[in-house]
Length: 451
Ligand SMILES: C[S@@+](CC[C@H](N)C(=O)[O-])C[C@H]1O[C@@H](n2cnc3c(N)ncnc32)[C@H](O)[C@@H]1O
Ligand code: SF4
Image 1 (cartoon, rainbow, N blue to C red):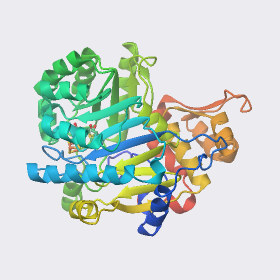
Image 2: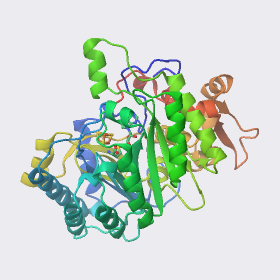
Image 3: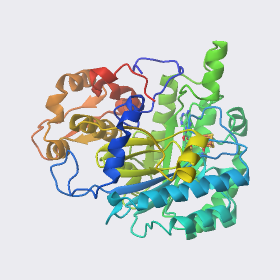
Image 4: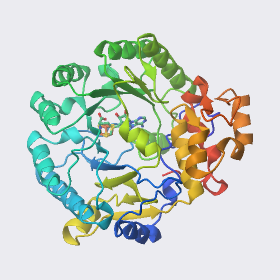
């Protein structure tokens, strides 16, 4: 996406990986299988150090009460208990298959992430059964973070207590907006009273970190309502807040409507959405929060760390489980198949890993991936890349950095040889960071579809 585009048109904005997902392919699947089949050599590919990279586990729970009109995730609605049980069985069997792989020898999970979809869609009984079955094959006693994504209307007091008991340390709540009219218009399944009801249970349970998700630019958003959203969020006082700028990838209900009727998007323009995030960051900071990435503010940085985010952005391994999940092991990217019958069939009938496409990035591509992901934190340590990849990122992309300096998005260090030297984003740069990243892509990936 060009950084100059102002209308919110149909297309992807958020960049979460490199090379683009559209370039991953079935021909590379044997590379992942091979990576699983050997104990991981004590070297991080591309790294100069001899340490094993940290390992995370991602579990995808693809069910939701309703499909939000803006959502682009792989989700299923109207699913009966029998289908959920079949999915949970497949997920457990997938984990048992992964646990038997030589790659897993002597590996401990540093972080675990239950994402979706809506993991909190599962009932207490389904959750307890899932965890009990998972723990027959893997454990995460040493994990420093266990995240669980929740939609407010799916919670109950016993479910929140069960999450705490099951070891969740970071509960992320999809509030998105406090206006019932806006929630309804955008197809959310919950209203604001369900946020407040859930908040009491969540506060009582005392999780180490509770995060609230908001979206800047939901259909119907106004300045007055946005200010109310920020005021109400601060009143709840979560440990962290994540604010996404509304985007319209091709597979959302809104995008399909726009493309079919050739109508104008009802989402605010990019400059307006950025102004809303800028306002939010300012007010959060006035209230003691610090900006921890282009999307996140945190109340007490000494108390809360972001293990999943920070490890992933530094090239950790991630075991992806569940339908359509993305992962990375021993230097190979991979994604599970996105089709329901195929995912279940490969595991339950054929007893094999449900991998659908893969890609082995070159060392240079791994460097680009880490650089663009870490830039989302607002700064890059030149020394980090020099040590890990033997490359001076300032020198390598000097003319691109100079362009961004001229546009007011980037500040360069006075002395790049200093071990503490950092390339920093200005606030303007932070607010449009995803629009700045494709300039670092290799030429062959600049104009391809992202997903
Ligand atoms: C998997 S959902 C979180 C858990 C739960 N499914 C929920 O929505 O409450 C992840 C987050 O992605 C964000 N999101 C989804 N679609 C989006 C879009 N089109 N633009 C920006 N953010 C989006 C929402 O903030 C949502 O909370
Ligand atoms: S935003 Fe969350 S609740 Fe809505 S459809 Fe997407 S995953 Fe489901």
